[in-house]
Image (cartoon, rainbow, N blue to C red; front, side, top):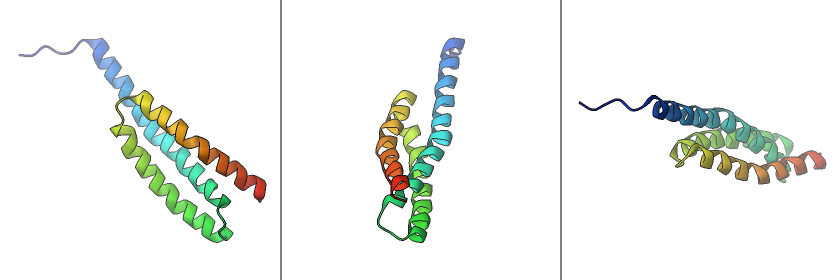
Length: 99
C-alpha cells in the first residue's frame, strides 16, 4: 500500500487549485470585460463594437479558463493575465477618452 501524502502537500495542492480556479473565474471575467470595453476603441459603429466586444469577451473568458489550467503554475497563469491585461487596459482607456 502506498502512504498518503503529508498534509502540507495536500494543503499546497489545494491552495494551487484554489488559485487557479480564482484566476479562471475572476481573471476570466475581468479579461472578458476589458476585451468588451477595448473593442470600443476600434473604428466600428457603436452597435457593432458592443456586439463584437460581447462575442470576443465570451471567447476570451473561455480561452482564459483553458489557459489557466494549462499553465505550469498558478503564478505563471496570474502573471500571464496581468501581461495580457496591460494592452487591453490601454485600449479601454483610449476608448473612454475618444468617446
